[in-house]
Length: 314
Ligand code: NDP
Image 1 (tube, protein in one colour):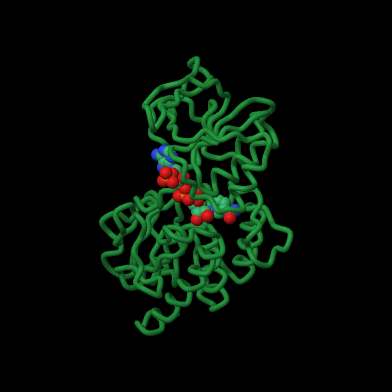
Image 2 (cartoon, helix red, strand yellow):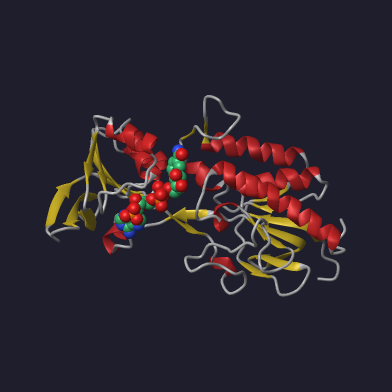
C-alpha cells in the first residue's frame, strides 16, 4: 500500500450528480477518478425525452445528456473505470475503495450512486421479469407492438411510461391502488387525454399470470372490496418509485430509515469528514436530473474546500 497512488478524489457513480462533480473537480485540477459502474449513467440511461433540463430547448434524450456530460468531464481530465465498487472502508484516511481485490485510495470521496426502480415484490413478478414484466418502458416498450399492457403506479414515471408505451401497444392500462395521483398535473392530463390509455383505480396487482414461458395476464385485487379479477395482458411495467443505492455504505454512512444518505444541512457533507454525497442517493424529495447536477457541483466545491482546509493538498 505504501507505494500506491493516492487519488485526490474518487467519485462513485456516474449520473448527472457524479458527472457534474467530475466537471467541477477536473476544472479545479483535482484530476478526479470516477468509478462509473458497469451500468454507467444511472437512471437517465433509461429515460426517453428529458424536456426539463435547462439549456435544451427542444429536449434531449437521457443517454445523449449523459454522453455530453461525460465528454465534458473527460475533456478537463476526469478518468473513468467502468466497474462496480464492491467494498469501501472509510475508517481511516486515505479512504479505501475496492473493486474486487483491487484497492484504490483517495483523499476525498464523492458518493453519487443514485437510486434504482422499486418492484412489487411478488414471486410471480420475479418469475416473469423480462418475460412480460419490466421496470423500464424505454428499454422494453418496443417489444410490445399491438398488444395490451399495464403500468403500475401513479407518479410522473408511470404517466411518462404509459404515454411512451402508447407508441407501440394497442392499449395501456394505468393501474393504481387508490384514486389519488402523485403525478404532476401536466403529466396526468397528458395521460388522461391519450385515447389509448385507460385508468384502473383502487386496484393492486396480486399476481402475474403466465404459461411458464411468458406472462399472459394479471390478478387484480380491489383495494375496496378485496375482490379478485383476472385481466389478460401481454406486458406489465412497474413504475412505483425508487430505492437509493446505498447497500455499500450500510453501517458506514448515516442514512434515513429507507436508505437515503443523510447530508448536513445546506451542504453535501456526510457524517464522515472527507466523504460527500450528492444526487438521488441523498435526495428523496426533488429527484430531478437538474437538482442532482446542482448537488454534484456542491459536492465538488465542498470536497475541494475541505481538502484545502484539512491539509489534503493536491
Ligand atoms: P413517485 O414516488 O412520485 O410515485 C410512485 C407511485 O407508485 C405512487 O403513485 C405510489 O402510490 C405508487 N406505489 C408505490 N409503491 C407501490 C406499491 N408497492 N404498489 C402499488 N403502487 C405503489 O415516483 P416516480 O418514480 O413516479 O417519480 C419520482 C420523482 O421523479 C418525482 O419527483 C417525479 O416528479 C419525478 N419525475 C419527473 C419526470 C418528468 O418531469 N418528466 C418523469 C418521471 C419522474 P401512492 O401514491 O399510493 O403511494
